[in-house]
Amino acid sequence: MSNTNAGHIIYVDGQPFKANEDGMWNLTEIWKTLKLKRGKSPSEWRTKEAKRFSECPQKMRSSGQGVTSHILADKQATLRYAGWVSFEFEDMVYAAFESILSMPEVQTVVANKMVGLGYMAEAELLERQTNADRDFAYKEMARLFNSVDSRDPKRLYKAVQLGNMTKDKALSLVPVSSVWHSRIGGL
Image (cartoon, rainbow, N blue to C red; front, top):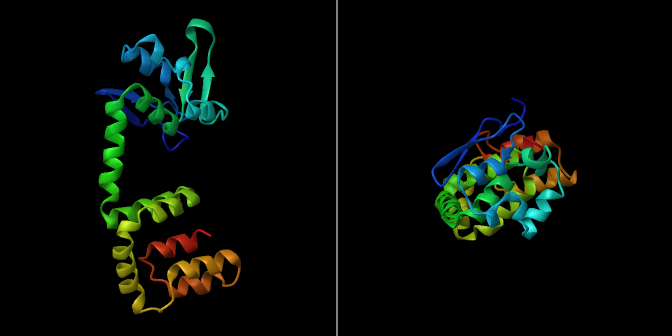
């Protein structure tokens, strides 16, 4: 299995759908298995998101021709398609997302995992959009960093990014258990 999503299962309306070895789901199979009306077939999915995904073969592509043709999609496109065909599924995804991010300690883990998977910009957006939990996060960071250095770990991260500080120096100022340690180490 070469892709991180290979073999993963997504449940839509109680039905399991498994990704292939490339981490792609068969949207045509989802449509047929759920016995959706013709207007909800993958070929009828013409939203802005669908068009954006179809322009990138790593996100969504056709396989086969004629009656044997299928539309394959990565996890993001599959989740969006599932939300398009099932409002209940879309509501469940948003509810799960909100529930997870309502816990500041989990939000930090999620943002750090996003960085680890290479989603730096998205992790920054997540941190900016969850301002309600920022006070808690700052208190926790202050508690962690008080014994090491009074500098803001975000500034250390930026300093390394800009080339104003070596990675080794910044890592020496940040506790190993901190999410910032792994972020700085990943630069």
